Length: 252
Image 1: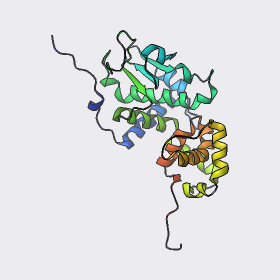
Image 2: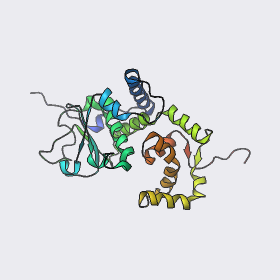
Image 3: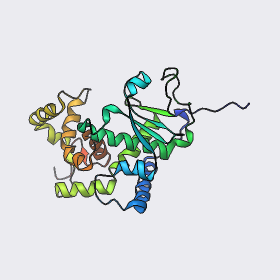
Image 4: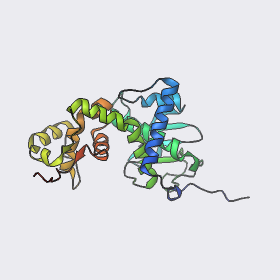
């Protein structure tokens, strides 16, 4: 009997960011051709996943199922099933709607970019207890492997299309000038106070304060696109609409 090959995150080929963005745009275009062109946010990610891709979405208690934490989503490739942790159910936890949308888009990214590498019961055996209902792959919030980075980028590009974000930015700001972290720092105390009241705590990490300032600036578009402020911040940084500081010019 031939030895069955197994999926390895390290074997997923490198995909240029532009290729991933093109794949996300292609999926949105395919959905538009089938169900009607999406011209404004929010992106109907539930319909893309369930109606167009025909994947079943189920909420699951991953802590109970896998006995490990920090799992937001999972993909059962053979069953065409997307699992989402019950803690992200937007009906029960409205504040988690943005993270729920991102999880769906992330799993759609795995489906479009990686499903050919998945095999039944091949994924992350050492992570899950014996007898667990094993998906092809589980997505942990702390995983920074290339396959997860690719799925995250796909999700960002699908939920926050480049041209749509830029158009929304111009409608909101009246121009395409970026917002600078250095300017936000000059007014940081009321911003941080407002953010702590919303979050209930300070964002952890060495750059937590800067992230809070930038996510405060990202909130209007995050609400428009129904994504988390963190996801919108990262996308706006990618599009160079959020920048650290003003660059010196010849006229300064």
